[in-house]
Image 1 (cartoon, rainbow, N blue to C red):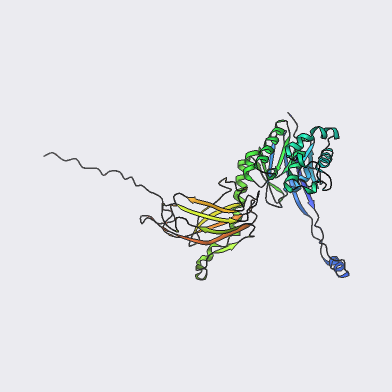
Image 2 (image 1 turned 135 degrees about the vertical axis):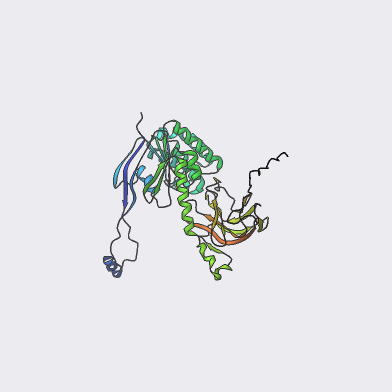
Length: 413
């Protein structure tokens, strides 16, 4: 049996807090002497896993969970504080696409420099130059300084260099954010070819759909520790469930509607406004019959390529009871390539709620649920006229089957 390409055992990394820069004065000097030093913090603790040849391991977690620190340890950029780490073979790193290029050198010179840095000879690099440039689609710009390249051009060239240097281990940070859809498809195909040749891949990603589709196993980091390591379906479901729960903490408290003062307010709004909800409409009207369709048109602006925001819709009753809570991530709806502004339609073909007054709550959240871009709570009221035969929250179609009454036999005279 082949040895693992990557072996990690009880790995830990501790960092010291850097002092904030301040003018060098006697006052600041003495203030610093009086101030208690901040304790070091652990970015990673007790992390263990292996990656076999040809296997693709996904790493997920919130911002600050330790994902980038782990990649830097695997790439030998930083050294561990505790535990053991072994990476066997040539490492190809895509930790910061284009970050290692020298701006004043040409594309050709940067390719040679990056290839030699990766462990190839100049002869090897020149033998692969046509393939590298062709894959990146930059033949007409090869002898221009890299400082004249757009961000997308730098990213494509960096990706092409990394995957053409015969890596045994490929470390990737969001590689599917490279270029347009056609280029991303070629990236997927090329990485699949590398895996068939025995290259192990470690992918850090916030896109749960990409992780489920491409990875063999998934490692979930929570505050520097392993929260789960299992199949993509199992781990991403656990992660999405926990991150979704955090959104409830970002929402205004539903109980606020019980106070007479808040009952007349047109809803509450929270968020960073990186993306905004500009309008929410009921095309079929806001007075519904139980069992009729509910349709919401959610207009937005501020989308960017690769942002992959999560759209959330929930329905709450006027007393604060949550009736339904759903989102595009759980529904496996991709939002990576939305136009800058537009309208998303949400619909429930049969809204089988009991009669009463309800609110549609809508929001746009960060891809890892770390914060709300824009969340409107109890801003869009609607009413349901339920069937009189029902009481309670739901009013589904019901059927009663009662046994036929026994008919007594007629007695003969």
